[in-house]
Length: 171
Image 1: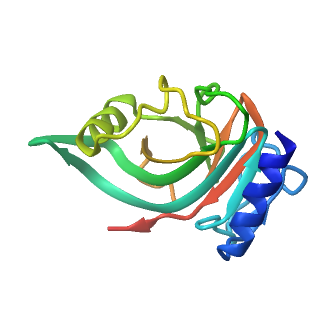
Image 2: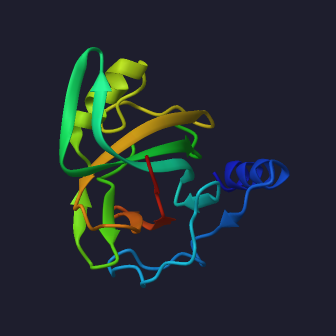
């Protein structure tokens, strides 16, 4: 497993990515400092036996999928994220992914909007599909967040070293 992590790190560096290791990650339980100066878009984060790359993030009012419109109660935060399983066997991503904003509010994944987006894009279900070793998977994750929320930390209670800072663009 360590060899796969090293290979992933070398590939990420050669591709020009900035790499954050678990030692540089901040604990995910506390809210992020305000104002947030850093944005982890494009940064490679190795957390346990997983690699995460935040490709893009944006706020939208609604999601249109397969002729259906799904509207946020606040506003949707849409994350484009790439995940790689560094272990030697297939695994489901453990636990849940949560967002914490600068006010310390915690937001969970909007399962309905995320599922509709995955169906529309013919992508894997992050909650239930096995991710094969050493293969990159692209996911769209959608969170319904408060209208006044601006910057976030993405973390997981089950992957202690996962911590991505997100400063979305508006659309």
